[in-house]
Length: 166
Image (cartoon, rainbow, N blue to C red; front, side, top):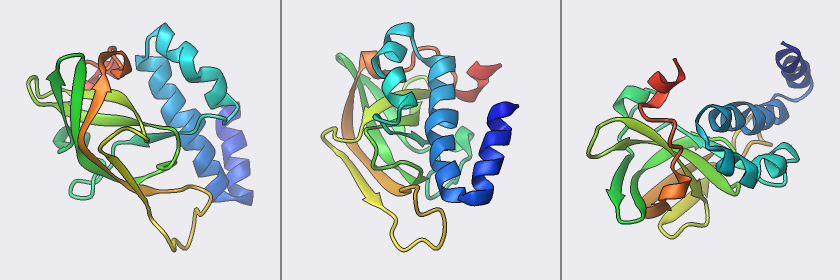
């Protein structure tokens, strides 16, 4: 409750800054808390809390919005990891260090989550410019063209997308 009240008060002053923090410490960290292994958490938690490591949360797609059941971004199991293909739109903190990408497994058809560094080969981030509001949050269009994600970057506890939360 205290976190919610703090974000509400911060949003009264600057909604953009509040949104940036909500994506970083709310969506991204909560996803990691629920689905990441202890090893994955140890790698980035402290830097995320200190905002030295900026993380985006990649669900929304241009064609389907935030309808997670109809994601078009895919993950294909390959030797040593996965290949991600597709795109995301209006992703907050898009130009950060990493995006938590929600994608449909091509084989199982289940939704999974993958930690994708934004400097990965085949990952292209285009920041949406000239927004009228929420300017501190760098929203972007992100393109994934055969982006290799090592097995250790898959959030293994996210075995069936948002149904895993129950």
